[in-house]
Length: 352
Image 1 (cartoon, rainbow, N blue to C red):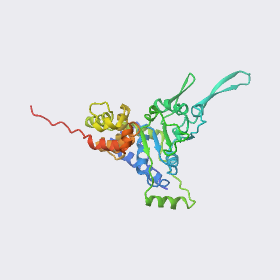
Image 2: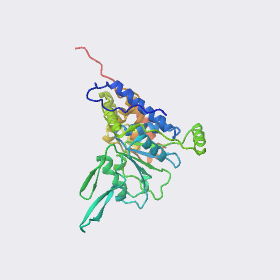
Image 3: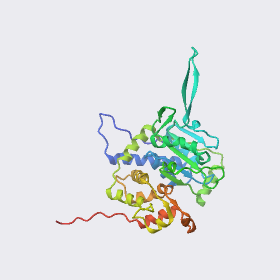
Image 4: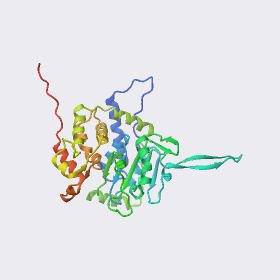
């Protein structure tokens, strides 16, 4: 068994700092090792895995959406095994209470008979939290995740408790069962960096799945990154350069999703009720940085933005009845926007 490459930690004080190229190559090797470990258990789903890794490397959260049996839960639990971090899973049910997630105050009595309250931490105090079937619990309980996902802390009574970094929420939901479910509020959907639709495997992938899962064998995976290494990678990814033209492209793309914006195409005005907010642009740029870093590049390319545009924007755009009548879902609207919104060209130098 080969050991994974060393984590990209800061060098000791008596050693010179490595250049960015060496660190990026090391990081690229790490993510390839993680993909190889995941491939021992998960067949296919390369785009889903790429987006999960991009979210982790940029402090983002993911919402996995797909029919039962597509290994959504297995994918997340295997990822947690590869990362040397704590992992907890919450099975969301209609009777789940907010305190079942955040924790609760319990009364204790000491030897002298004096009573006092002690806070017992809930499962949210972890590094990777799997919120399984998040749409099966009422909005009151869903909202228990809001503060944790945005501020990385929770408030119980008058006390605020910080969550130990890194912290990620990866939620799953089943799109085909609507009875007894509670759709996530738009404010909470916007907290998720990616809304990833997990699709069916190809014919060859399905044969591999059937072969691997019916032999009664279990695959073990190796740990690749520690929590400290993840935090260092997050700093590395945040330092990836973004050209002002890429920022302008992202701004134009996001603003074009808003039907009341003067730059929105006519079909957006006709088919969309409301578009994406500024957080969409932030996630597009951060996701683009992660894609660039995973490919060993120093700066973000417009193609990186286009690669992640659909999972970033699909849950931030609301289409109307006319769109449904014309067979245009959110993904189709975004694909059309990607074709219609041109990448800005550098301004030509003019001679004085």
